[in-house]
Every structure is written in C-alpha cells, then in structure tokens.
Length: 120
Image 1: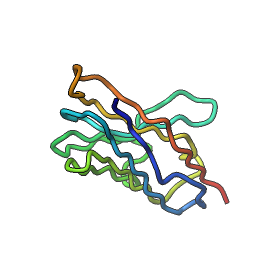
Image 2: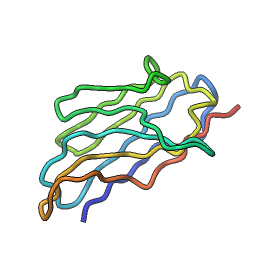
Image 3: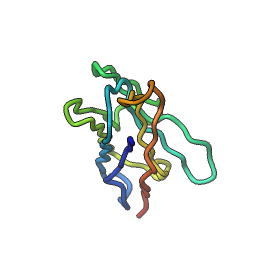
C-alpha cells in the first residue's frame, strides 16, 4: 500500500503565509515527479506547482513569485511554501506523486487534500 498524506492547511489572513507538506509512505521503489494541485470552490482541479526528481520546478502563472515548491527525496516529501496569500488561493490543495511501488508499475497517486482558506 502506498499513501500520500498532506498537512499544513488552515485559515490565514490575506497577505499571510502557510507551508504545506506531503509525505509519501508505503512500499515505494521510486518517485519521479511530485507536485501540488488545488480545487477552488465550484471550480475544476488545477495545477499549482510541480517538481521533478532532480529539482526542476514549474508553477502556474497565478502563483509565480509567491509560492515555492521543494522536495526532500530522502524523506519522500514535497513541500509548498505559500506567501502573500490572496482570497483566490482558497481551495482544497492536493498532493500528487508519480511513483513506482515495489509491487507494480509507475502511476499517479493523490493525497486526500487539505483545506486552505484565505479570509480576513
């Protein structure tokens, strides 16, 4: 069994910061890309940021300069540092990983999501 567990969501005022974490655990052989997606209320899920095993980062235009993605390969963990948060960042944030478990081929795995609410 493989699972991704997010933490760090919550309520924050506009202009504030939050740091999300996501740890992958279980019978993992390897992990390639990891990242974060989000689903605002009433909207489709959208990509926020992705990072390769080697550390190459990609961001949605809406978060460039405010969010930073990083990963710790030794801990199978990906982080999302979110600064200068805006009302429109309110969403459920989902962790993503393309990983290969010991017992099967590579595929995408998702966490259950963590709520981020930006409100005064």
